[in-house]
Image (tube, rainbow, N blue to C red; front, side, top):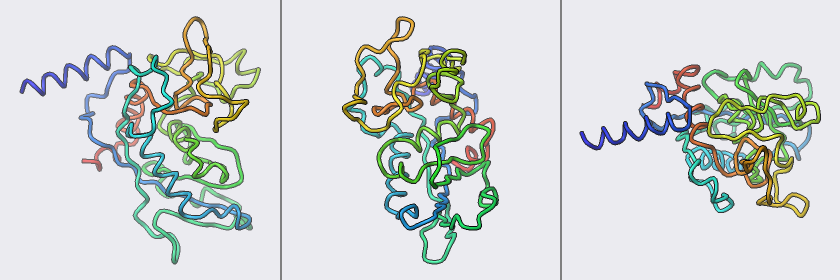
Length: 264
């Protein structure tokens, strides 16, 4: 009994401390979410192999369970790290002969409407892999990924799945880091434990000479930018905050409740 009271106190205190109110139905269970990958290709290069997809899925699960490599985490952010406790599994269905379950391969030639490929979009993450930009949001039926980013440990799928689960960019309710959005956009992502920042830290996903990690002395309005956050554009993304984790779980409970109920 004492342990239960202590746990409830910690959960309540955490919710109040970081300003995100945990849904009363959330008992902390691991939420399990099916995922299906649609590979839309023009040639064999774009028709990426299964191993890259499975590597991407593994990274996604590590990131959403706080089991990923945290060696790049800035010590100043260690008290903000949250655990969404969400697990993704390949849709338990073989979508084509001789293929692995949860993966569908479709030639782009003659494909006029991608929407027809969607499978239960409310209760399943549909990932479209093609020659395209990376995109998603809470109102979207799918996650769009560029085939060249799959299996590269760039956390691009984690970032876009965060959008699918209701998170904005760490730099606010703006689509990108263009001059227009930086100047006139809303820099508040509505999560209380993510400090405001002016723009994405960097628009690159790999550590390079012109895109180092960690960035040095990057501040906005007196506080250090949270460049380690998965919802930033940064080569050293490695964490969600406690508030972001609560927000994503709340969005599932409130908008995709079947996923929560089926995770008992």
